[in-house]
Image 1 (cartoon, rainbow, N blue to C red):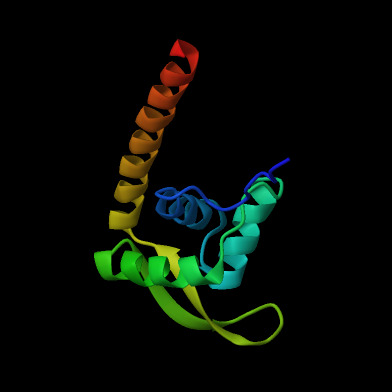
Image 2: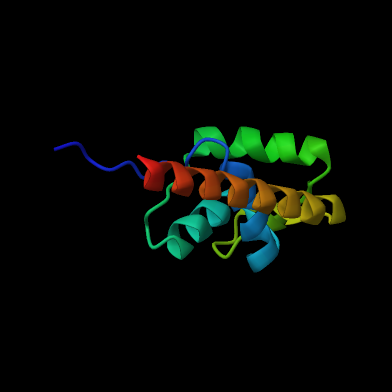
Length: 111
């Protein structure tokens, strides 16, 4: 029997990261992945190889800002926070997700 996948669905990483930062405030990369995993009851996992390029892209888009800070374990890390533009983009991402899930739901009921 095939194992279910816990990887984040392509196209949802931006939504999940923006929402994590809205909910939990400034977070470093590992804390973002931990937050997503925790709030999804371990159903979703974000790999570092996907997360950091996405964070850099979102920062380039102006949706996030970053600053160096100290973690709970007294290590230096880059902390990311949502900008006003990032909050607007989160709204766009939520609307896109709602349309997608509505369409998938309809397709599943139809077949």
